[in-house]
Image (tube, rainbow, N blue to C red; front, side, top):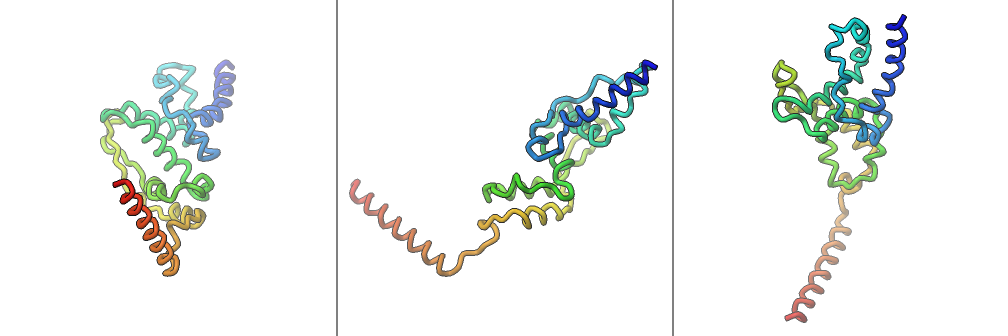
Length: 189
């Protein structure tokens, strides 16, 4: 009876843990999630008769993957920084399917290459020993995320080309500015 009550109470904790460690409700919430918590101290649950039944904590795929990403902080090769763990969570949980593009709609066009790199890469581990794995960024061949960003983020700096008239107006403007600067230089001499 105690095990049933304890297990039911812990079952209620899973949504709160997911909210804490990997809140996928929106971009900002995922960024603000906890990227440090690596476990619940239940690594030795097999030897404890009460904890042995609480495997559901690791049967939730999102929670399990979020814990695995956070555990990378202590890997052999110096560990993954908080930013690398965050990028991994964004790739794993946010940039999937019909993700919300609103956080990117008004961003500076200069940042678009970084966002495109973020959504087109994934990380793989090489090693076999979890504590000594090395992680490498590789292409994930997923063009769906790029399509979604380009289709929904109207950044004229990226997708429009100046007309010949506007180019000439720009050149005239630059030449005028240049003439003013030359005049100011002469006055300073």
